[in-house]
Image (cartoon, rainbow, N blue to C red; front, side, top):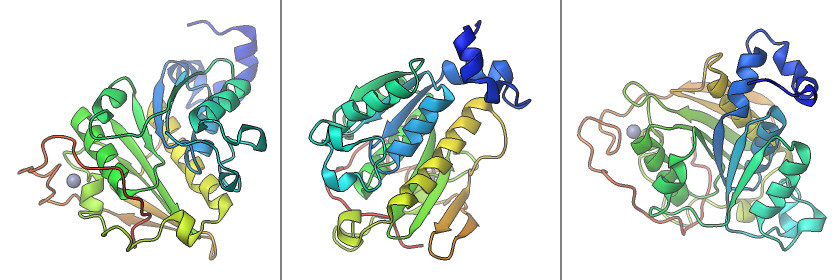
Length: 270
Ligand SMILES: [Zn+2]
């Protein structure tokens, strides 16, 4: 691939990095990343990936922009209130970088469509806001052996992990074997969330995606990064694979993607 003059300028700060270079930038331009949720986490993830020149970005979200989203969902604006988030997001990303092709998917991610949607992408990013969706995303990524970059936020705390290489590393079900019953864990709309926290966690997710595409550094595989904005502390926990995991363990009982993404609740307690 030969870069156009304007691309050499646009990506010059990447290209001069020994770990990226022209080859790395080519990889970014030819990669395909699917972002689940065009909200608080999806916004910074998609915006940094677009700025980095990730060639194709799929956005999955069925909601429309609401004025209460704007405190943290920086991909949207006052002008796009009332329009589908995936279209509002596509508008922002294409304005940022014309090299990027955005695929807006205005659907709820379900057990039925997850495998189909994921199959055309290299890396999956989970920025969803409920456990039902998280398990569907995890299971579909596992069956397709796709790298999943997972993030979540609530109140002043957030967490990030990378799920891949399941023979020696955990899946999301190893970390959280069971979802709490609906109503036990409050959602962002009930408990609140510090807007800027979405930027912190989403940006960390974007960094892991870019590293994965470039094949550099050490990913948060088998590790859970916890962030507390009030004390401004990061903690890294090792998360072992659960030998009894019903999905990625030696005797799986989950063999297809199933379950519902209907009920909404948020970050599990750690
Ligand atoms: Zn597992």
